[in-house]
Length: 242
Image (cartoon, rainbow, N blue to C red):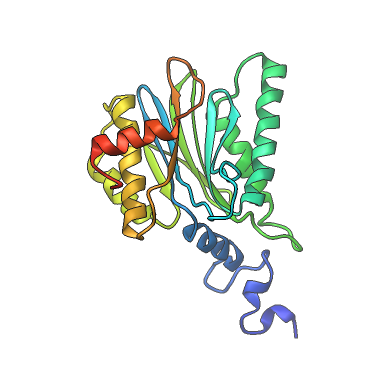
């Protein structure tokens, strides 16, 4: 009898579908993502905002843990899940971005960079002896077609969003975004919405309000990380994180 006929064998190999059409290893990877720190991406006509919870161990050196990374000047990502898996995908995305500049003498489109990353993710769902990447990446950027936010799945699926949240606080953040997001929002208002969403998600889990925010304005098309003092200023203005 084949080993795949045994009960429960479907979750032992990434290449085998269960009788009801599921790939359990991909679902397990998604469960890992759902337990991670909350991240978000929000786009508006004036640019893109990326945000992430910052969980720091008391013995960990400040600045040694990152959730927001730069792919190119005009593209940033927020990650949730296994940072080691994310590092490999981010390195590949950076190579693609620089290769595009060398080949075509122009910045890579945000969707093209996203597709390249998801092609790698999808490849690791088809072969025996490997596992899916245990990470979801929210990719945001500004290119010649405007501002964009893409959400990616461990399976290699990606979709474009006006606003997207992943991680443990995704339900709280998504509900807030549905209620308060407006396409005509300014970049300043979009930053405030991102700060408010992340702080509320942390407060709901009784965690300290430690967050990081990255901004890509349409004018400069360059990723800028907001200082802790500036983020605290936004929190005071909004009356959150007390």
